[in-house]
Length: 589
Image: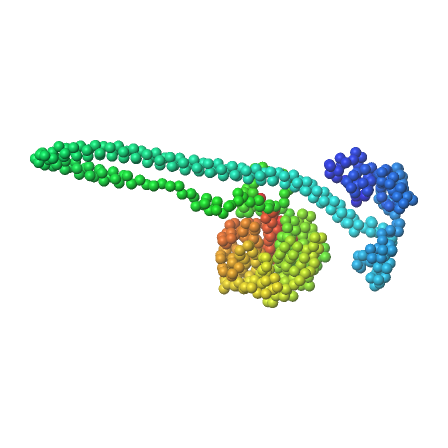
C-alpha cells in the first residue's frame, strides 16, 4: 500500500523532476496535494499528517493547532502503522451539526452521530468507529479503496496528458485543415485554369480550321468569278453575229453545266457550322447550389500526433480489414448465481458497452478500458432486448412483465429506473430512433410512439420467427429463422420490403448490427459460428471469424466505428462457461 506523504513509486518523469529528494524520503502532505513535492521536516500526531518547514510554522501559529504534538527530524514515524492513532473522530455530523460522528451501521453502510443512530438505526447493529477502525485499516475494503483511489490518480494523470496532447493536436489539426482547404482551392483553380486552356485550345483549333475553309472558299470564288466573266465577255462579242453566237453557245454548253454545279457546291460549302460555348451542367448545378469545398467530420478520439500523410479519405472500409483477437473481458459478476446469458449488447460510447444478462436478471455496464463491470442493475425478471436512446438513456424489454423499462445512466455511472411502457404479446427485441420505438414480435414489427401508441405494423408472409432488429437512418433490418430458410429482410419505415439476404452459408441467424457506413453484421448462430457482412442492398460482402475458437454460437454483436472494434458474446446451453462468461473483443486492421 502506498504511504500517504511519500513520493509515489513509479511516478512520472515530470513528477520526479519536482523534487531533488531521494526515493524513500517523506514529503509534506498539504503541499503534495497541490503537486508540490517538498520534503517534510515534522509530523503532527493530532492531525496525523506530515508537514514541511513552511507548513509546520503556520501549523504552530494557528489557534486550532497551536497545542498539537509535533514530532521533528528523526522522531518522525517512517511507517504508517506506527503513527496510526485511535484519537476520537472530530468530524461533525452533517444532520446534527453539534454532534460528532462516532458510530457505524453495517446494515446500511453508513456512519453517523448518536442522534442518527437513535433516530434512523434503532433496529440495526451499530458499532463504535474506534472499535472497528483498526480492522478496517488493515482490511481488504480499505486496501481496495486505496487501490481504487490510486487508480483514479493514474487515470486523471492520463487524462491530463491526453488533454495536453489534444491541445497540441487541435492546433496541428486546424493548421493542417486550413492548409488542406487552401491546397484544395489551389487544386480547383489549377483544374479550372487547365480546363479553360483546353477549351481555348479546342476553340483555336476549330477557328484555324474555319479560317482555312474561308480562305479556300475565297480562292474558289475568285476562280469561278474569272470563268464566269470570261463567258460573259465571249457572249457580248457575238451579240451582232448570229452564226458565231450559235457556235460559241454550243461550245459553252458543257462548261456552263460545270460552272453551275460548282456554284451550287460553293453555296453549300458556305453553310458554316455555328459554334458557341455551353458550360457544363454539373458545374452550373454546383455553382447554383453554393456548394462547400468540403466537410469537417467528427472522428474518433485522438490518441497520438497527427500524421501529415493521412487524411480522412485514407480510412479503410471495414471490408478491407480483417478482425484480429484483441482481448476478452470477464462479464460474470462476483454475485452472479448463474453463468451469463448475454442476449443483447449495445455501445454507449467507445469505452462503455451495456449487456442484458437473462440468466442473472440484470443489466451490466462494462468499462472497456479498465475491463471491469462498472455498474449492475437487477430486474425482477430476465431482460431480453435493449436499445440505447441517448448516451444516458436506455430502454430494456422485460417479456415476462410485458413492458419496456427505461433506465437512466447518471454521470457517476449509476443506473436508475425511469418510466415504463406496457407492451402486450410475445415481443422480444427493441430498437429506437428519434421519436419511434420499434418492438420485435415473433412474426412482425410494431412501430410505436414514445407513449407506446401504435403508429404502424410491419409484416411479411415470409417472416415466421424473427430474432433481432437493427436500424439505419432510412430503414430497418430483421433477422428471421423461418422454416423455409434463414434470411435477413430490409424494410423502409412505411413497411415496404426493400431487399432480402438469403444464403446457404447462413444456417441459423441471431444478432444484427449496422455500422456507420451501412454495413450490416449478422451473427450466424451455430457451433462453428461466424459473422456475415452484407451491404445495404443485402448483398454478401464477406464472412469473418469462421473457424475461430472464441466464436461459438455467437448470439449478439456490436461494432465501434471510432476504434474499429467488434464486441461479441456467445450463448448456448451446453457451451463451455469460459466462452459464455466473457465478452470477446476483435480489432479490425
